[in-house]
Image (cartoon, rainbow, N blue to C red; front, side, top):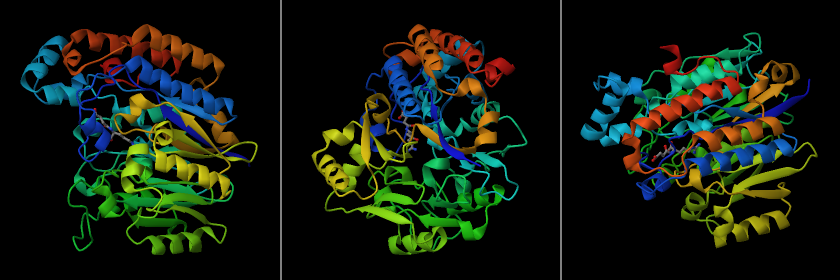
Length: 445
Ligand code: SUG
């Protein structure tokens, strides 16, 4: 049966802002307290989704989360009316309020790990929302993420949904940002490639010393077990701790894969040759690596341009296209590399460049914004059709953004109780547009 790689992008939420919440993510630290542009951010994301849909790819939308997260603020002891909760938090703990206002669920590469039905023992598509334990502002996403995924992929005959792993550092899980799948055709049984930053139970292994390794080996193992993957179709690899310490906080900042191709930096993995050898043994001889040398693109250039946070896409025409953020074009070394790579015809035919500056300024490029879900024909028919991008949905969501989103947001605006009302009103309408039912805490009481 024919299968497709669908991309489900996160819609940027109305509270998109820069609060410097992600230690180890260079862009997040650099842009702390800069004013953000929520309306522009959402529109930049929608433009990418529409462009990919127009190229003939299956493109979906995942809804943002309710922010400020009043329920979490109440759990932390702020009380009274919703306005009181916000006012107390703003006065006593502004950073906690900022964390509870983050629109970080937009980066749906961190929403979940997804295993296609061709890989799983029960023949269903498996989803495990990522617990994102390493960052408080992200650790509060997974319950609502799980409900949004269930409302999008509802049919139990085709889709299996697991709870997030236990929310402790031992099981730190960042989802698909650290997961890639190799195959010949999307519908074939594939090799799932899990990348982790450190071992939690065995301290003999190396680990970064400056920035956190968010994702553990033990989390990878647990997800592979839950998804019923076979060992000879699974590869686990440790990220190079030295590059984590230079700002590579997820593997998708230094590597991207599609079908039988891995596009990665020379320094991406701890034992790079052993990783290539195991992948070749399991994927087969057609497995191909496009390795970018440090002499062409330094780790700094990779982190600043997000060359590897690209989407490597197979077009219906058969072409392979690399979707890049505009920052790659602005970086002399990176752009020179891209031009020479294209000229050498190494397997990537063309690049498409998008302006995603609002997301990039928080460390989120094209690949961060999307969750890949391989679906066969029957599974695609079972997806909530209201979440699939087309002309009509694009128009509708743009109008919705125009109506509900602010042009600009500063950290001080997070204390405005009106922002909660605006956000809830917008999301209530969105659940109707996307036919999600009651996925938000405020709708469930
Ligand atoms: O988790 N930034 C996100 C960026 C996630 C990028 N995702 C992938 N690489 N797949 C993070 O660090 C910054 C929020 C702030 O500082 O306001 C933030 O959460």
